[in-house]
Length: 180
Image (cartoon, rainbow, N blue to C red):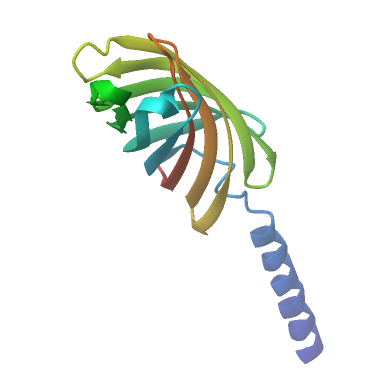
C-alpha cells in the first residue's frame, strides 16, 4: 500500500510539472496593454536641426493568429531644436517639434519573446504649423516575462514621418506590458 501511494504521488508530481511546463509564454499570448517611454535619435537632414526626442506611448496588442499580434498605439514625442550657425549672419535656433503619433500594425514572434513588426499611421503635429504626417515604422524587439501575463519590452524601430522635410529617426522603447 505504501508503494502504491508513493508511486501515485510521484506520478502526480510528474503530471503537474508537465502541465505547468506547457503554459503559454505571456509575451506571445493574450491581450496586453503596454505603457512605455520612447526615445528618438534623428537621422539624415532631421538630425541637422533636432536633438534627441523623448516621449511616451501606449500600445495595445491582441493575438490574431499563431505567433501574430495586431497592434495599435498612440503616444507623444517631442524633439528639441538645435542652434544652427549661419556664419556671419549669426545663429538660428530651430523651433521645438512635437507630435502625437497614432499607428496600427502587426507584430510577429519569430521565436519565444523575440518579435519583428511594422506599423502605419499618422503623426498629428502639436507645434505651430506642424500639420499631419504619414508614418511607416518597421520594428523589432524582445519581451521578457516578469510575471503571469506581464512583460518588460525592449524595442527598436526606424520611423519616418512624411510631412515637409520628413522627420526620420531611430526609435527605442522601454515598456511594461500587462495582460488585460
